[in-house]
Image 1: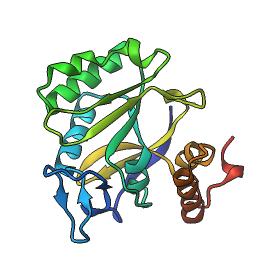
Image 2: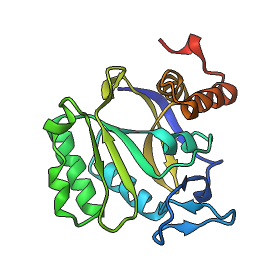
Image 3: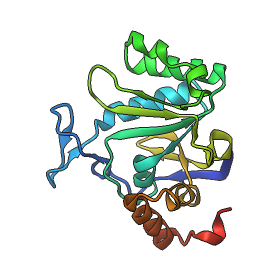
Image 4: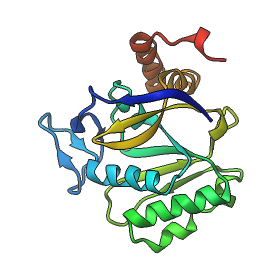
Length: 195
C-alpha cells in the first residue's frame, strides 16, 4: 500500500456531509431532511480500527466525502489487507464496537477467495460495512494509495483523490463517472495521473 506523506486534517467536512439513503429510525435527520449515517458509531469503528492497528483504507462514498466531494452513501467501504493476522485484528476492532458473535464469520480465507468482499451489518442497524480485500482484478489492498486523515480527532486512512479517480473512472456506472469527473475538476487528477 502506498501512503502519502503527512497527515490531512479535514476542515471542510462536517457531520452532515456523510449522508445515506436509508430511512431508518437509527439515523439522525439533517436540517436538509436527508438521513445521516450514525456518525458516532462510524467514529467508534475508526477509533477501534486505529487502536487495533488494522491495515485498511477507506474507499467508496464516505472516502469521497472525506476528500470534500459529498456523496450519498449508506455504508462504509473498507479495503483491507487480507492476511490472517490483520483479519484477526479487524475482528477484534469490530467486537469492540459491536458485541456480535457473527463477527467471527469474517475470515481471511473468505477475503482471499474468489469473492473478496464480506458485507457486515450489525444487528443494531447502525450501519452497513463492506469489507473488501480487492476490487476485481483491478485493485488490491497493496495497490491503494492512501493518506492519513483525521475527523473529530479520530485518525482514518483514506484513499487519495487520485486513487479514488482511478477506482471510479472505468466502472461504467454513470454515478461513478460523475464522481470521477468531480474528482478531476476539484483536484486536477486525470488520465495522466493514473496508470
